[in-house]
Length: 265
Image (cartoon, rainbow, N blue to C red; front, top):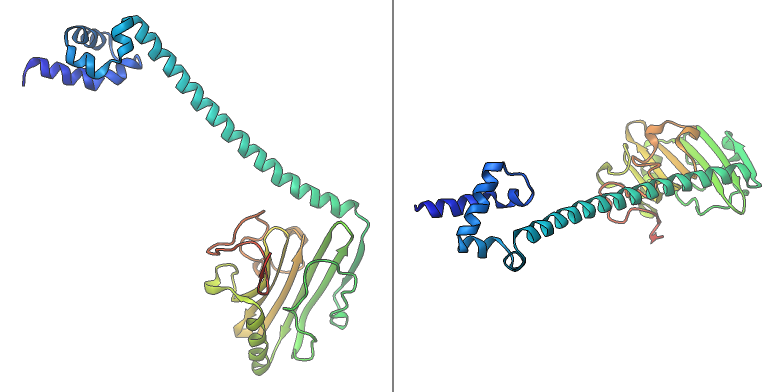
């Protein structure tokens, strides 16, 4: 290989660093000397502006372009951080508004732990139709736990409805069959830690579902609206896996937000 070819190769390799001002004085002198002597490298590496205005003008332009690139990157990063901050503020504001409405809205409050009060939900004014809950408790072998807590107003409804029923094997199979006919099954336990079906899933505001505790022949029915984790009266392990994540789609679910029976809201 000719020495001139070697110099051309070295110059082409070092030229980007040269434009950034990163080459050593010896390398800079080598590149500039070679460019003055080699028309081929001038054509390949330098724009027409260099040939017309000389090296000083070209280097000034290169410096301006470097400055513009840094400015563009800084602006892009600033915009991204601004959008991220806005999203966080919006999420916090939404949570704060719900909490404010809970505290300030005139409310019709009802609360009971007695199964004798089952389906006495006249003060409720939310979005649920309670189809996942049994019409009566006559089919239950026993009620292990029941809790109803509701606060309704024209502005906001909060609900925590929890029913834990024990069944005989025959009645358990019949009730499970009823539920799977009206609700969506949680295939592969993607949404809940236990086998489950659901009629509604708004992960940050409302959900309604039933959990199948097969070994104990128990079914746990739960309906929640605008309830935070620290307000729960039951074990958190009975919650949907992503409960409380604002706008978060459930894992492995194509249509994530709300399904009530066969309708998507």
